[in-house]
Image (cartoon, rainbow, N blue to C red; front, side):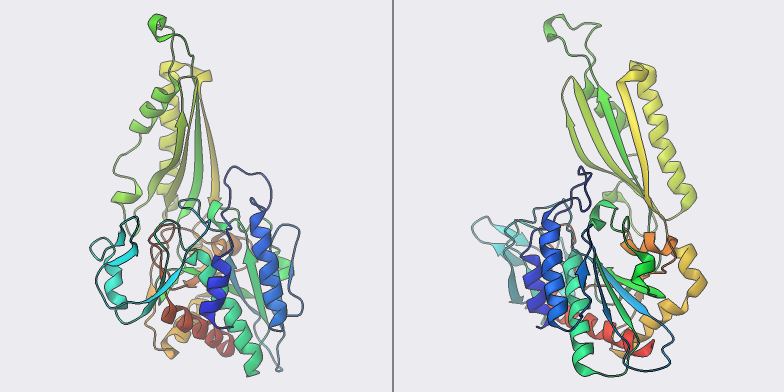
Length: 403
């Protein structure tokens, strides 16, 4: 199966992870795709492929030569973001000749080059798009498809290679992808997540990340007799958000600039809840951003009372740079593989995170390479077929060069 057909198969499975769930994986539908991936791996000759009780898929391509120096792993995640629907994804493969793309004539949904100028880089390429009502799932099913297609071609070719480990994780999008990853059982000396963006991107710096849930308790009473009695939880939430720096949000930051991001909000007079993520590459600035939340909660408590607001802060992962820098040859292997395949490496900081960030702190150094996708977490997500094909070749080259 080629990488396009494999990708289209995988995106047909809805796999949104659920931030509110306490199960592992957070959504049972991820297990459906996990079992499909195991079938796929076994069909191409990965005989030990299996899914564990937590929904993690593992497999091994044994070395076919002597004197193997390194066991290399490749990791991607099967879940998709909750930022857009993952259900009934309708894909099209278009030959892109430039200009705006009409995704959905009935609903007048257009992907414009003005809003998405990266499109101009793909004139003459074949793009996989949706109908503009769902995300695509290139993040990270493109990575899954590229890894497994590379595995299939490595096994068929029988060119000398070392041992290769494959890991497909659930729940990366909610920061739990590494929670139950069996680093020891995986058995790689180092690995690469295939979870980046445009062709050529290579990343070994990521955000430090935390989540913040702020819950407000109000006192409801008939508004006609509410003077000095009502405490409106929804208004408390508005007051809280107004205390945060209004320039430190995703829409106003780039590069190494961190942010807080209000993911969801719900509220009434009686109760309200705000859910945020907090991100920064710099550890000190990361801690400062968390302190701003603590201070804002204190300010609300000072106004309304201790019992009317509660903050839950939880760190998700940290910047893997300080770990990766101890073995920069791992990054160089990926750079060289890109160059050998005619791709210019673009080393950039991740404005996000990967499973590899957590795994690097657990002893499995794990920089991130591209998937080829653009506009992740969006109804305007797309991926060039040619990029997926090239990344499949890059994975193979890493395997052959690092045996």
